[in-house]
Image (tube, rainbow, N blue to C red; front, side, top):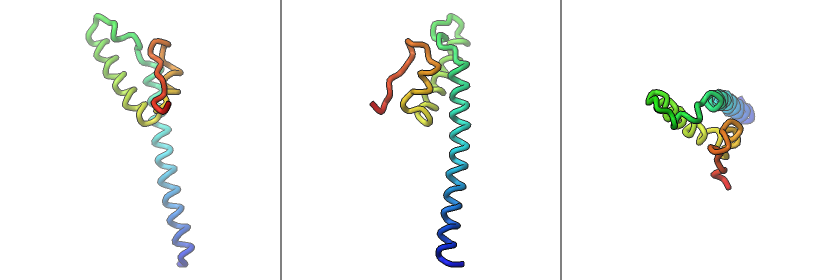
Length: 91
C-alpha cells in the first residue's frame, strides 16, 4: 500500500469519527430541546417540594447541556419565557 493510500485511509477514519461525534451531538441537542420544551419554568414558585426539586434538577441539566450545545443560548431563548432568557456568553 502506498503512502497516499495510507493517508486516504487515515482521513476516512477521522471522517468516520467526526460523523459519529456529529450524531451524538445531534442526539444531545434533541434531548436538550425536549428538556426545554417540557420544563416547568415556574417550578421554583411551587409549594410542593417534589415539583420544586424536579424543576431544580431539570434546570441544572439544562444549564449543563447548554454548555455543550448552546453556548450562545439561542436554543434556550427559543423556549424560555422572557424573564428567563439569557444573553450570550460569547458577547
